[in-house]
Image (cartoon, one colour):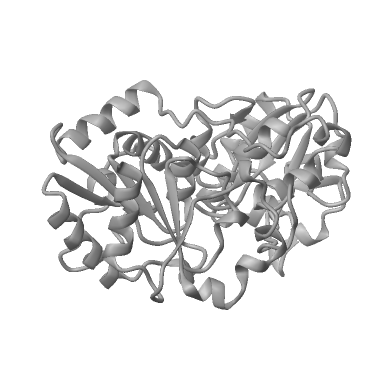
Length: 375
């Protein structure tokens, strides 16, 4: 067996492997299905909206190389996580075969040979898995119309039978299948360390200034610092924590607030547990559309300001009553608000969108949005 010309270990597991194309996956019934999800944290959140629509006769498991994200499905419903034993995000190359030796482009909804490392192999066998879903989670960038206008809804149309989809009221927001709750022991440890950073009388503000898939959506460090200074002046009780999905400190900005890696990076606690726990403790959340913002929007319950510099909010998240999406002029110049997925939302699925004038939002734009949510 080869992978792009490189020899790998011989396949040690055979399973029928399905992708999102052709409707074959939606026809499966009474199977034990492993969902291989080699995607970002935001995609883990978005998939949680699809999960309740899947056929209930099947049993679903979920994995990837990178348990930091898989742990988001701990304490959830419908889907059972299966851990690779490796916290850091990867593609399996370190274990001898990228993506289990599968080439997504050659999948044809048929039996395939997989190269599965331990301890994952034993865990898959213990679950009696008899089929796999491996989707590349296509990005339609605003090209699909309501009610399949978001990335998750579009995937649901491919994974769920048409008859079953007709039983749901898709004019209403989809519900996440996740509880966004860490196990008690980890939650207690996270809260204990958080108390060393923010006192009960202070306000914890979380800022997620970047993502790992598209540099264009990153909030420039100089503008982050401008906002941090303005926020501290506005709220003397503010304690600010920058969110980074990596385990090692990576946001090297002079005079910047500490990061989640600074505060929790020396622990063995999964990043997903850290993230959901600190969001629950937050006074407010501000961020670009990367995994942490998508998590906060799915959780709701606190003021959330999204800063949309490269994408349009209608394409991704279900609406959140406690959120404002700040949308920049570049998106309107490119007429992203006129694409199919941005045109025909019913009021039940409307986002609160506030345009800002400059190429990036200034501190006042973000503070005004927070004030509107907190009033």
